[in-house]
Image (tube, rainbow, N blue to C red):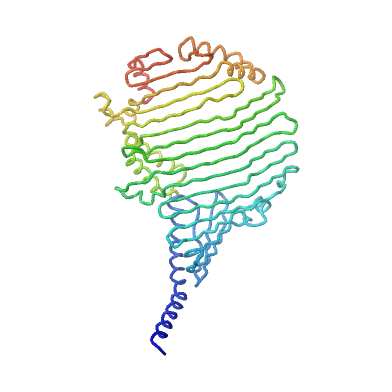
Length: 464
C-alpha cells in the first residue's frame, strides 16, 4: 500500500473517531450549560424552576424541569439532540409544556399549549423558537360563550452580547350572546445589549435597547348598539447612551383610530372620534456608573431566598441609597401629550421636571446633602408645566356627567371658575389650563410670581 493511501486511511479513521467521540463530549458540555442555565434562571431572575432529572446519552439526552406557579406544580420534559449537527449547531432542545396543567388548559388545547425549540449555535449563541397552537372552543361552564385563539409564534435569540425578541399573535375573539370582544394583530418585539459584563467595575456598558408592544385592533361592542369601543394601541420604550457618561430613557403610549359610541339610558348619545393620541415620556441625564451599581445590586437579590415583600423592600433600599448619585448631574424628566382632537374640543399638555447642578446650590443646601440627601435633592428640583383643555370639551364632559352624576356636573363649572379667580388656573384662547415654572429662586404660576422663600417652610414640612 502506498504512503498516500496510508495517509488517506489514517485521516478517514481519525474523522470516524472524532464523529464517534465528539457527541459524548458535546453532550457533557450541553448538560453543563443546561444545568447552569436552570440555576441562573432560579437564582438571578427568580423563575420558580428546578432541574429534577437529566439522563445523558450518546446522541440524545432527556431532562425534566419542575415549575411551580402559585399552588400549581408541573413538569416540563426536554428532548435534547447533540452532535455536532451541521444544520442546527451544537445541539437542539425540544421543550413542551404539558396540556394537563389544569382542567381549563386541557379543555382548550388538544396538544401542548406552548412549545419551545432551542438551537445552540456554533458561535456560542442560541435561538429559542416559541409556538402556541390555535383553538376554537366554547368556554367550560359558560353556556353560549365561545373563545377563538389564533395562536402565537416567535423567538428569543442571543448572539455574543446582543439579544433579540419577536412575538406575533393573530389575535382572539370572545363571543357571549349579544356581546363581543375582538383583539387582532398582537406584536411584541425588542432588542439590545445583554449586559453580560455589567459586574465589571470598569466596563463600558452599552445601554442601547428597544421594546415595543402593539395591538393592531381592539374592539368591544354589543349587537344592540348600546356600546361600541374600538382603537389601536402601541407601547414603546428605549434606553440609550447619553452624553458625558449618562443614560437616557424614552417611552410612549399611542392610541390610534379611537371610536367610542354609546347610548346611555339617560342623556344624549356619546360619539367620540380620535384619530391619534399619545403620551410621551423622556428621562435623560442619569449617571451611568451609579445606575450600573443599582442594576448589579438588584441582580444580587435572590428571589428564591426571600418573600416577595422582602424582595420589594431590598429593591427599594437599593434605589433609596443610590438615587442621589444616579441623579447627581442635571437629569430631566418630560411628559408630553400632543394635541388630542376629540370632535368636541382639544386637549394638550407638557410637563417637565429637572434637577439643577449641585454646584448651583447655596452653601446651606450643599451641607444638607450629607445629612439629608433626599431632601437636598428635592431642593434642586425645577418644574415646568403647560396644560390646557378647550372650554368646548369641558362643556361636553359636563353635559354628559349630568345624567350619571348631577351634583358633579353642577359643581365642575363653579370649581373651575373659582380656581381661575384664585389664580390656580387661567383662561387663554377659549381654553382653561395651567402654566407653571418653578425654579430655585421663584415660582411663576399663570404669570404671577411667588417668591420661593414663601414656599420653603411648607415644602420642608411635606418632605419630613
